Length: 149
Image (tube, rainbow, N blue to C red; front, top):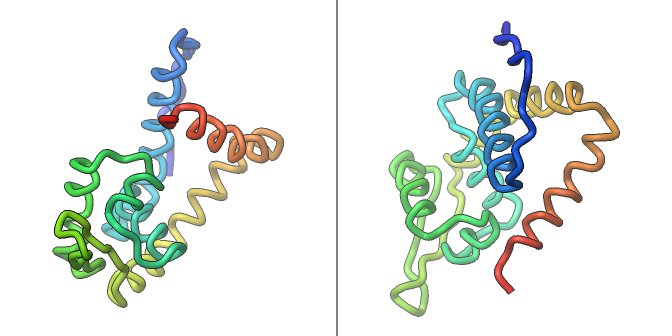
């Protein structure tokens, strides 16, 4: 796959939020392109991956894990439920929803994982080992610093 050449000058933005959003969009585009043949978008893959790793979660906890507001999360979950990849059931409190990965969701995740792994490998290679090693802890620290109280 050939990529468009990068702009001659990529400006360092003075706003951390703008820079993080730009980085997130660029990385998401790369992973979405790699996942395109599987029919799964990165946002969907991430939800399936989290549910596979963590097991069933309430919608609120899932939103907290992904730093997603409830409206965006609900909108993202709808197609996954329509595909039969996840199921939700009410909790003790009617406002609470429990989300779990179905067998079909596990198969969809397994089908998409090789493409995700290849995107991950290429990104790691292009970023370089030192930057890759620093990225995870830096991103976690960023989430923690930006999270409310």
